[in-house]
Length: 322
Image 1 (cartoon, helix red, strand yellow):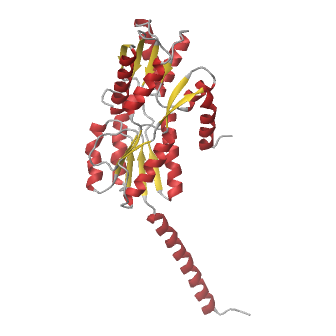
Image 2: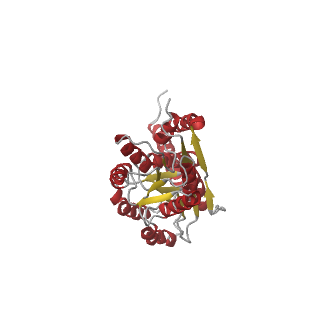
Image 3: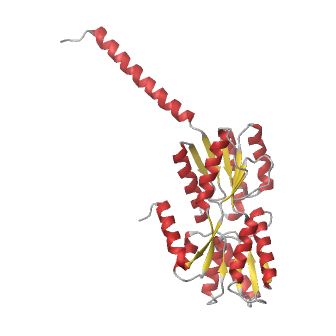
């Protein structure tokens, strides 16, 4: 039967109405999602990739419109780049911010602007000691430095000499780790021959280690304040045919592989994936005005040849590798 023009017009109008209402419903649903921005120190290291993976899993699990932002700039440029990222994120009016601050003293004035807008700020990895932060999620870096140094001293003898590689002198993470390490070395009768700062990444650490070996060849071990530095130090030692123990503090995949292969006897590992996941979980609680734990310690693991394979399987599952 032939349909009248009026009938067709009504049907067409109803169809258009349904499509428009569906579009509005979807748009509203997307707009209704809580928005969380996670600002990390850098996007180029394994350590921060693991934090990012944890955050992204939490975005998915909790229905969050989330964004992870980090700079891939050179080590010396990271501070200014992060400050710029924080300003840009502020202009986007997120519901919460999670930040791993590179330079706390420089970032606090910008974070104060978030506070003025009633945007909760949570810190991950680095506790900046800011009274207005909603929570800190990470590792007790003093304990981490202490435990890492204890692991190194277990491979040494009283009277041996070690070198400490550190990052920025104004970085509270590095300050706490080195303080813990120095106390452990002193208690074990280990001499700290040199503390070398501003070597926060592998290439800088490698160059620094080459210089150290020329000037202070009689060292017995290296404490690196992060695993990127540990890898740089190991590379320099390998090229010069020198075998002394090196201990880092992070437990990134490359370090765990070396333990698994027997090229390192043991390593310290932080639970970086958990940092990312829990920080986003707590950010959602802050947005919803629910109680937030002010300080969450994700703990420290010791990686040995016995459990390194299990750790590798864990990371491969997270990364989706066969």
